[in-house]
Image 1 (cartoon, rainbow, N blue to C red):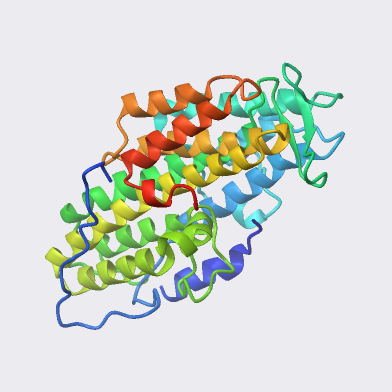
Image 2 (tube, rainbow, N blue to C red):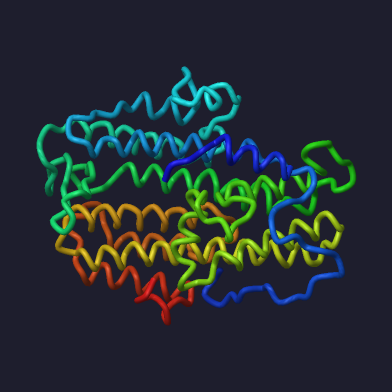
Length: 362
């Protein structure tokens, strides 16, 4: 998942669920035009673009630990997290004045930094990983796939990545921007970034990680955008959520607040549905490769990260009790999980999100 910040930034600046919930997207739009691309006037979500790029470089650094002899440093990871001491290879990121940490859900900052410590410790191992032993674990199915796993089998690079997706991108987009959009000023235009309401909506869009011409262009998708695209064949998620973003932004610019609110409700619904479907996809992968320690543990780490991510929305369909139950099936040692555990976890999450009819094909 590589990234060209200059291309992405320029585009951005120039164009300047619940078990019983249903997709609320059913109201007609009013009579104004809605562009087919995110080409509104006065759009600027450069801060989100910088943070996506920071996360991308941090994830790349962590995953280098899967190369034999490569030790990753916890302090380097934490410096990337807080953009301290010029940690990025891209000097634009070092000097942009942005960071991931100050946007991360505050109570969980110590948790994600503990994941970085665990990642660093696992990378120090000089032996192959196995149950109770940290180190690189190689897939039996595809020897090209290798992961640096902790002694309990967790891939902490994945845990950090999914934490950033949940506790920064998702959390900020839903709870900080979309939830407060109705109280924003929508009259005073700041050249280059529109009204406060337009700007905050654009920032929420920026965290979804798709280019302005998505889904025609799927080459530059990142993080949530990447998983949305991966699931599109089953969910039809690409066009659906992009159209919602386009219609909501057009409604804001035309002061059509009924349509704005209805489309934003649908964005929140679909974003969480994508998270749930991604979690089911990962556990299906774990079942497919159940006998392969590397692939099973890697994909289960992603599953746990996605399930945890659901808690960062005030509108979460999954309750904390349901989340604890699902994660309880997986447990603290991925080498000890059983096929029945995986089936139970998948069935519980598919029931919560009414995805039973497609759970086996995600």
